[in-house]
Image (cartoon, rainbow, N blue to C red; front, side, top):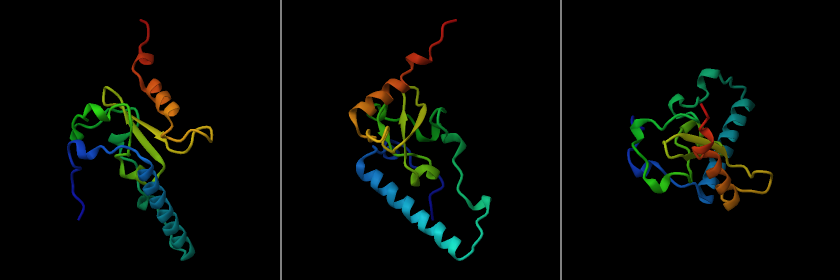
Length: 137
């Protein structure tokens, strides 16, 4: 039986690594095979049966209090997605200083820059920095 509440503390936050990307690809392929098997057997899949993203883990929203404050070493670095809906999709999250969730695609950017490329990591840090959000009054 699955636990009702997610674990709290540093064990929730896991760095996004090439090994975690490989796990995501395997989960995605397994889901695709399952969907294809259901289509081959003419099993109808209703919209209600499909998984949906958690509304409290949307990009741009602050991290819910149930997860606690992430340790400072997990801020501004790629992390595995916390939302079960996205765990089989090629995405990762980055938490900014205000615990705001930013979600990024793990596919290579411009067909060149993997999520682990230093230039892409630097670009993400610039993108999520709080300075651009200041607006003059």
